[in-house]
Image (cartoon, rainbow, N blue to C red):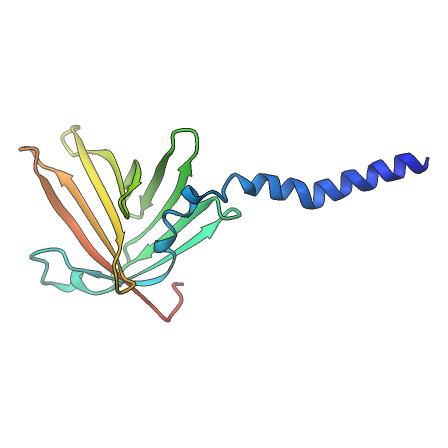
Length: 177
């Protein structure tokens, strides 16, 4: 009887302390921290070339670790009501990063890529109104002043990259709702 109590106690200790630690240990490697420079509450300034209108107003973005540090959640919103979210994870099986972006315009964008030389570069495709696949590339880089630069480009019909969004993330004191 005493032995059964000891076994149950040991099982309880393992279930309470060891199992969660083992589950999260998979997400504690350096690869899972490569995108941590993007974490925080940000004011996002659209610096896209030629953009000189109200869409140039700052937006807000909250980037946080979730699921025990295994994933990064992005919550983005503009002053005019556009909202989007992304879920980001380092896929240990493929040794690459994955992002799934969804927004209130109905866009689904799935990207894959790597963190190389201090830049996170993720690529994927969207289907245009004519049913053709259009290649997308988004990169993020921590700047020396603490800001983060995000460039979203798509490949045009001539094979050249056209910048769709050039954003600068600046730390914000206010929390994103």
